[in-house]
Image (cartoon, rainbow, N blue to C red; front, side, top):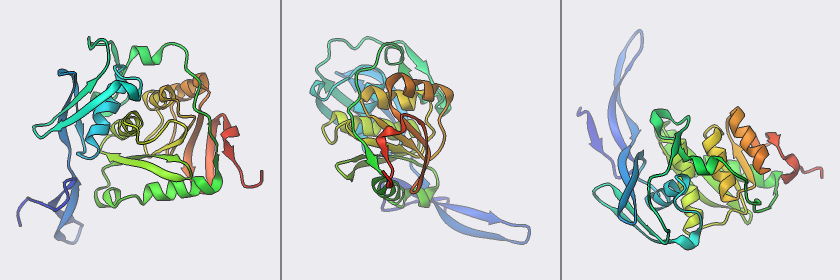
Length: 264
């Protein structure tokens, strides 16, 4: 049995493993998520790089640049080219591409980076909306069953956007920050608007909440927990922050009025 063999999917690889118990050893194949380095360039100037699951790469490139403070609106984005050698080239109508001061956040391996500009200063008004519990149920269930990639690999995070009573976009990645960046990029590419609710399987740390709030998304939900700074940013921006999200239960840390209970 060879160590590795490609599968038809461009997102996973089948890898041989040995299941060891006190009484036996059994060989079988497991699906492994593909993690690939990509550099991101703005107007032909390399801005940074990241390890990424090769899905939604155009969205990731634009969302990455949003998180670094280089792009702020859909009107600025002119063209995105994904090069086979591992480069995402974004062309945008922006005045400058000088390096910005960034803060390394809680992302594993330094993958979480935000510009200091994003962290400081007042927030623009959020794009107001509400969500009902029937919608919450559909949103969470559809997100968790969007693809088999999570169950196949147990190695990816997901992030989706609920808008107009449907799951508008959903992206997966090996990094929770990358999955959120892909949703930010989808908004900047005109595939959705910020007048929506967002759901992530990752924890709501400062950079995760900050990107959503800076984009104007009013409802931020997670399968897991927030950090203290993530909560502080939600309070500063006025965003609804809901953790431990389940189809019939939300633990809302801030601004619960946007969640409409069935009894109301």
